[in-house]
Amino acid sequence: MTIDLIAGATLHPLVLPAQADAADAGEFRELARIRNLIYRELTGRDEQDLSPAELLPLLRSRRERSTSVWTVRLDDEVVGRAVVDIPHDEGSRIVHAAIELLPRVWGRGIGTAVLPHIEAVAREHGRSVIQSWVEQQAGDGPRLEAPTGFGSVPQDHVARFLQTNRFTLEQVYRVSRLDLTDETRAHVQRLLDEAQAAASGYRVVQWTMPAPADRLEGYAWLKSRMSTDAPAAGLEVDEETWDAQRVTEMEQRVAQMGRTILVVAAEHIETGQLSAFTELGIGSDRTGVTHQEDTLVLSTHRGHRLGMLVKCAALLAWARIAPESPHVITYNAEENRPMLSINEAMGFHAIAYEGVWKKELK
Image 1 (cartoon, rainbow, N blue to C red):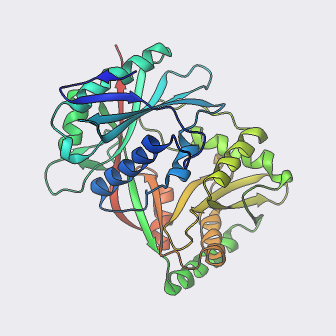
Image 2 (image 1 turned 180 degrees about the horizontal axis):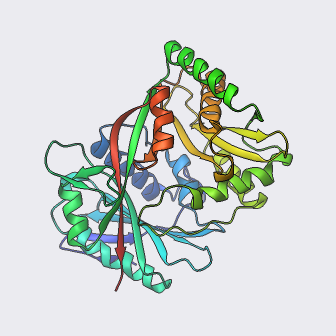
Image 3 (image 1 turned 90 degrees about the vertical axis):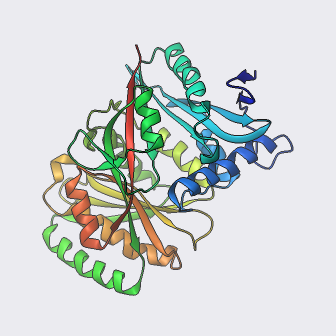
């Protein structure tokens, strides 16, 4: 059903196609193109580009959450999209939402007209909190400080839109990049040697997805702790339940997207418990950007330099998987000083910032 927004602008619920290259997938392919264009214009970078085939598995509803997608049209031209993810975790009060429009159509009231429809979806599912991750354009003007005391974002059009609509900035993420050079790898090898000396009770294990059967349970537990052990500031975070089935379903999506993900973990030798892990991922183009995905050290195993151990071991192993990838991109909460210190020691440097915003529905 088409929803009228403002004069000439409409909102269209999107039915996902069976395949990205299907005859009826034209609107979806256009949405994927516009999505990439929006991110490029906002960030000045292209590492968030996804082909239609890569994007499609990410937008499908799954056992742990439902996803709704709309295209935004202005005079029959696709100019943006809206996405709402509804977690199925027990007791959840939240939805994750995004309104993404081409900058050239900002200021016309389109985003303001879309927002009530997102709020209606949240209320229909009994949710009272909307949370949104937004990377803003770099700027030299006034900035808005995070209430954590760590990090800030530009006080720009995006921030004014969110504040006008009663969103509050809760947290800032740092976007960091590490250039993959021979000099970098030599430096990382030295850091790995130091970390191994401090982690004598642990050994490094690794695999390229899918996980070996004997690692599924331990890997699932580590993934579940990402929702409880990472800094969350004033955000609402559901405790996620991960089991072998959820890991397998995630790995199937990775395969559908044509991605390769390396998992490197630290195993506690005495107990056999996986105690820390990190992931590096890349698309089908092995000359593209590498993404550092989840990284975590279990709280009961901190103090042994396991974060440095797994991250350095992963980076050195990655040279055999994607030797032509030029750099690694990673996102970390600004108050996550232990992880930022590891990144900085390895040579990562900040290139951008992302705000995490929250709105309490009345």
